[in-house]
Image 1 (cartoon, rainbow, N blue to C red):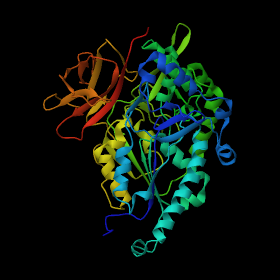
Image 2: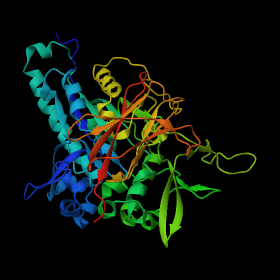
Image 3: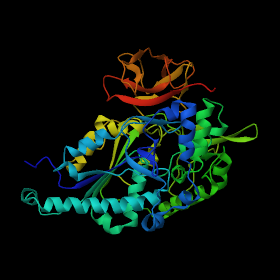
Image 4: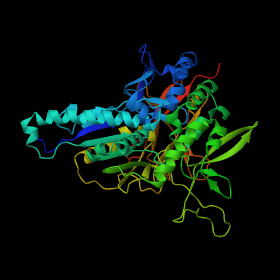
Length: 492
């Protein structure tokens, strides 16, 4: 009866933006509940300002979580509806992964969710997760011990399995690193699109004030919020990513400040990244699921505009040899560039770091946790079944990719949607539908894009109203790839 069940306790840990936040004193939702905060300039102003981290929240760390947890803002649940933020893009709810795990445990009580205040430092949330995971495991063990049929299913006591998305993988690592006894009680950690080396997109989010795109009201408010958040700074890239032509450097706190971030928060993040480079922490049973073949910002160039530093994302990375030196073109001495692709937010090497047990899938960062192949992989790992290392991709970027405007769109202006990695549009469908109402999709016509040198296909879409839209690519061969994109009202 229980052959298709695991006796372990499971914890779902969402990524940045993946938890619903509310004002603890008033119960007013601040994030993840009402899309009007992103589509209505008047409604959104107060919400986004309320999410700014104050000095106490910026200073909070693991010791704070253990001694005196913060109480101004409360994380209440995982996202239940699709959500979106400029640069970081869209995030789907976590209902599917929660349901997948519920289907393979002895009882639904074995699966817990860990919503957290993603604005705050990874180390702070790691300490909270360690405490919550310990309590969940203890409660589940009591339930198993009370059922004779469950005790007979095996002698080993239940252990923990974590299924973590994006930043959630960093939070799990922090929890297990801070609590070695909890790590010993953990059977497996599944990370999906986790930026172990950081993401160049974090800089783009901090640099929104210097972009010329619109709507300005939304981009400016998001930048001002992001600049105060330790959680965003904990996603900064720790690898060599600042392309200076003849050299490539790691970002410094001064660089981050120049691009619009907080130098103190950046310095703390870079110290932690350096510690993990020097003393890597291996999570027990770590299995990484990596989104592949999607156009992904991997490095940055600095340009000047009206006296401001503008961060320009580039879709290539640089390889480093065993001696720590950059690999260079032998003829010119210029650092060799290579497109490593990724999931649209996290480039491949960052999501791979820390384990050799890797599965590649064609999918976008924010929608990976409802991707059929990802859910199949999570189910197999929970049941301790061997699965092949490659479900869709092969870490070479060969395969279908979907690219949508990372700053979203403005109502009244057409969106350009791009498909990469396909030789022909024959048999390929691209459609757009409302992610909020689920209304019938708009099929689009793909054509070769004359402005691209990579043979990409493109289509244009004009929304009939401001809304959050789901773009879906189907090839007839690969699992469908989807991405969310927000169309906002124009500036007043």
